[in-house]
Structures are given as structure tokens and as C-alpha cells.
Image (cartoon, rainbow over all chains, first blue to last red):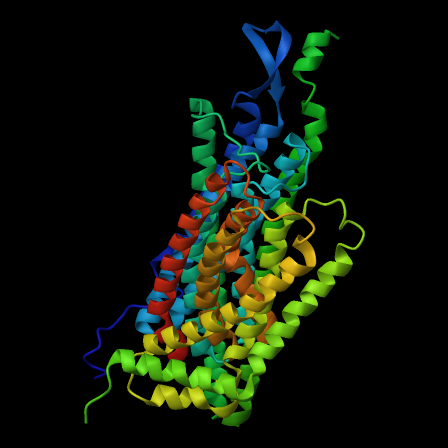
Length: 255
Length: 60
Length: 234
């Protein structure tokens, strides 16, 4: 029976991803820093309300107010996408755990979920400060905001659940199941809050398309943030794994 | 200063605290997470020392 | 030895839950009293505004708050007997499909919640909504109530199976339950409010949310049905 089961290669500290960990971290730091500088120095400011009369600045005719608040967007959007990538990774490892019962997949899932929570918090903070300035309110029940709040609450609930269960096998199973439910729930939540017509909640439409300079900046920061997230995930995984191995050794010694 | 120019950049100064705040909080949160990871590492190192002691005692 | 059909197993398990409840009436009484207490809290909360507020637009939301908290109470209790008497282990020793256990338990929870709603909704109407003539579309609230109850009981059964084995089970159930049912709640509140107000274009706010809520029910019940085996065997 045991032999018939296909051997699964579980992730372990020291495998190939750890070899690229340091380069990834450095590259991520460089890219995000460059992107940060580009956001403020290179990308053109976006237009706000129209001016009463156009004004010549340098060689350009400027017809609208120049907005600085939009600079938040350069980090907000990449961070939001990375948070979703991390969530999908966590669910993937959750499913792998449920299929193989290999505890290391659960450790992966947990580390990825922590990174997801971190990036969800980034998204909430940047988004909310932008909302506060542009819309003048700290909170509004707009579909994107609501969905992210719900996502954040589910991820927090995931960790509350983890803390409440002592048996490792059981904890891993429950976490895997909850992560799958979370991944299914979030798109539905977005769809429902968006599709239901409402007289109270304004549906915010963004201007479509990005200018090349904006797109380039966003792309750089996105790649940088992905690398940073990967490095954080891998770092956390190694640390958790080390603690687990330590615990196993201790248990062995006590026997 | 030209009033139209002033109008053009009128939202820059009021929005600055929010932008600085957003970037600062992101940076801080990142730092906090790294600190959590490093603390976990330190805890493991302490346990490692305990384990070494226990093994030394056993082999004596 | 021939094993009984899946449907027979389902009916037997469902009957077991119902018989247990009819013997003690523990869950129904506690849920009913809790619903009444929430209504009393509403009475105090709205004491100064009761004359002026637009109860038709608030009624749907308040009704769903009542249902969410009452069902949380019921769901938290739904596995308590099994846990205390080691009954779930007994059921799991029998070679039957785990999803049958889920379906039977979820059906029992739906029935209990519906029974409580049958009492709570008229009470809510009696205490808060008799001030103004009811809209002719009021009976249409039955459909969102039904769709919402099915979804909440489905998810809730799954989550209470998970939380029953943890330390702080009631708090944890709420922490998991409320964010996960949020989309369903939002859709159902919209549909219920549309039915209560019954304004000219009320179907715009009624049909679409109901379709989405049904979609949520189907997707979530399928996910729970598939994953239940893992949860209950852990």
C-alpha cells in the first residue's frame, strides 16, 4: 500500500528556490526603488479637474489640474495583484496538502497565506488613503473596497482558526478547506457587490487604458513586488520549516 | 504667483500627507513582517542551544 | 449483507436529527427566544427614531441581521449533541458516503432555521411594520428568505463541523461565517428590501440579486459537499 503510493516531492528548505532567493530579493528591492522614483519623476502626472484657462508650462499646453494623489496607484495596483497571486499559491498548496497529506505543503500554504495577508493589508492601506483624499471619506461600500475588506477578514479568520486547532493534521486540513472556500468566495463577492444595482453606492469607473510611461512604471513595480513577495514567502517558509525540524528533533530526543 | 498655475498644482500639497502616509505605512508593515520572521529564527536558535545541551548531557 | 440506498441513509440521518430535536426542543426554543430578544434590542435601539425613519428601507436589513445572528446560534449548537455523546464518531464508523452526512445535517439545519423564521418574521412585522400599509409585493420576501436560508445553512453546517473541534467554537464560527456569507447576505438584503418597499421598478432590485444568490448557493454547496469528507474525517 505504502509502496504503491506515488512518491511526492515536497518542498524543502535549501531546494532550488533558495538559490535564487538572494538575487530575487536584491532585484525586487532595486526594481521597486526604481519604480518608486519613476512614479514620481518619470511618469506624467494625471489630469484632474479642468482649469479655467489652459496654461503653457514649458512646451506643453496644460488644461487640467495635475494630481499627485494618483501616485499611490503605482504601488496600489501591483500590490493588489500580488496579494491575489499569493492567495492562489496558498490555495494551491492547500489542495496539494489535501491530496497528499504531506505536512510540508501545509507549511507552504501557511507561509503563502501570511504573505497574502501582508499584501492585502498593503492594498487596503494604500487604497484607503487614496479614497480619503480623493473622495473625502475614510470608508465607502464600493465593490472593490468591500471585496478586499471581506478577503482580509477571511484571511484573518484563517489565522484565528489555525491558532485554535492544536492537532497539526487537523489544523492543516481545516486550513486547506477554508482557503479553498475563501478563493471561491472572493470573486463571487466582487461580482455580487458589483452587479447588484444600487442607488446608494456609486460605482466608480476608472478611465480606461494607461499611457506607456504609466504602464512601464506599473510593470516594473509589479515585477519588483512579485520578487519581494517570493523572497518573503521563501524566507518565512525556511524559518517555519527550521522550527518544525527542531521540534521533531526535540520530540525524538524525549522519546 | 500665476493664479492658474496655482490652481493647476492646488491639490499637490494637500494630498502629500496621504501619499507619504501610504508609502510609509507599507514600508513599516513590511518591516514588521521581517521582524516577525527574524524573531521566529531567533527562537529556533535558542531551541537549538537547548537541544545541544540536552544531547551533551545524554552522551556524558 | 446489502447496504441501504444512499437516499435511505439520508432519510434515516435526517429523521435522527429531527427526532432528537422534537424530543428536547432545545434548539428551536433557544433560537426562538433569541430571535425575540433581538427584536427587543431593536425596539430599544430604534426607540427615538421609530416615528420618523423609513422602516420600509431598513426593514429588510434588520430582518437579515436577526436571521444571521439567530442562525449562528443554531448552527453553533447543531453539532453539540454529536460531540457530547460521541455520536459523530459512531456515524463515521458506518460505511456510508460522508457527503450524505453533510446533506442530512444541512437539511436539518435548513428546516430548523425555516421553523424559526416562520415565527420570527411575523413577529418582526408585528412589532415594526404595521405602522404603514404593507406593499402588495410583500409576500415576495419568501423567495430571498428561502434562498438565503439554504446558503447559510449549507455553509454554516460545514463551518460548524470545523469549529466544533476547536477551543473557542462559538466565536470562531462567527469569525468564519460572517465574512464568508457576506455576498449572499448582501444579495438577500437587496432582494428583501425591494420586495418590502415594492416601488415601481422593484423587480430591478429583486430578480438580479436572487439569481446571484442562487448562484452563490449552488457554488458554495458544491464546494462544501466535495470538501466535507476531508473535514469530517480529520
